[in-house]
Length: 80
Image 1: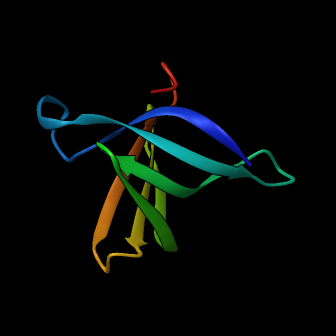
Image 2: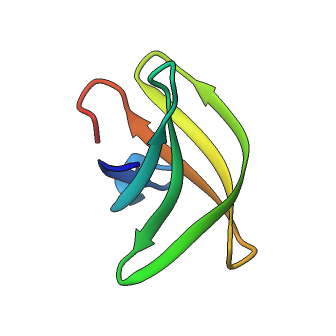
């Protein structure tokens, strides 16, 4: 497990915010988010509900321990 850099949370890039995400890197090198921080609040990920790719981003739809659903976006080009 390692901290996998800053990622952005949000639907519209103009409204996106940087967050810190800890990930697990599996045997194939694919990183899966485990937890993230919204400002000072830690949110543990209970479940990765869905994941998808586009040419420049990886997306994760996750269920947090606060029973909220979040979409995490990772920029594959800039690693943000």
